[in-house]
Length: 195
Image (cartoon, rainbow, N blue to C red; front, side, top):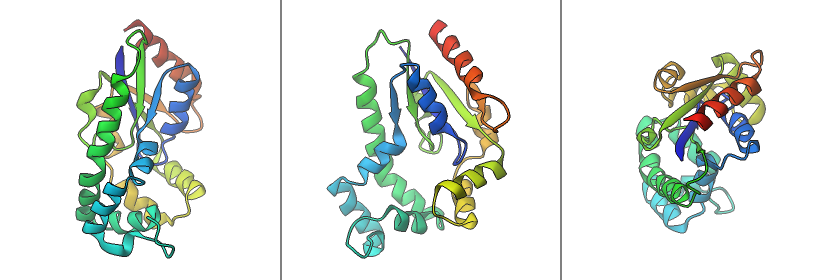
């Protein structure tokens, strides 16, 4: 069983690509969803409150991902502090999930936006990156999320460049709205089946 990761910078469409693989009956773990789950963990909430104070809560007293994003994407040091709390939890969830997978499965897929940033890429046999032009990525995020262009750019700048991710990956899926992605996905799927 090959351990495969799919990554890509914000707005690259990696989630869309990952779901196509899932439709091919490939087991899929979403690190982004796990990140949401981790933020429900009372121990993590306490740890984050110690680091960031009450600014991480909304007016109802609930943890606010938007407030956290506002704090960390404007400050590299704060982002590192957040990652120091959250990334080990997510890594543990991924490792436990991979251990539970059926060894007869040709490959499994972990979707992780910050795979390289978290230093977790060495846990995988192969890496796929979803790629799209920067302006298209910005446009997609502006449509999807309730944030400003400046906030999108802060998030892009907090990630390793797309070019570096491409250079460190085994496969690239061009998701520019022009090149069809299904043939690219199927080509990778069949290649991984043969591996």
